[in-house]
Length: 144
View 1 (tube, helix red, strand yellow):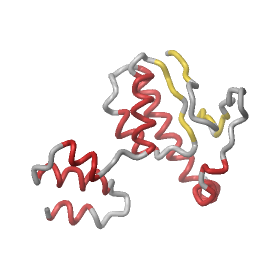
View 2: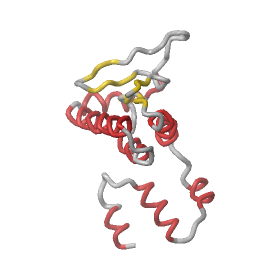
View 3: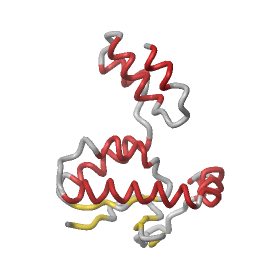
View 4: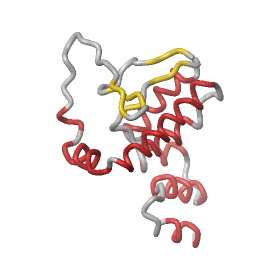
């Protein structure tokens, strides 16, 4: 418990993970944990991406992804070139976001509710600072 209290003082701590771990220690069932802490959109999306990664295909990294959550979930995927490359892309995106904080702070304030894909057209990935990102979340993937 002391470790959890200490960890919660750090703003970088994955609080949801700590809460889930504590609930497991206290004997809560997985079904209860899912109800207490429903999966976030990023968790759901990264689980879908794992299906692609497991086929050794490389999904695109989106600029609006919560990269920490994605890396956590992608670590559960099958070990292959696509997994390691995709996790590396998330790390590069984290660095890019850190360097360009003002741009991403503005994007988070606006939210992705302004995102309106053009019906019937495939979104083209954009190249940002050596990291391939997609402006929409879809079946953009690359086979390794």
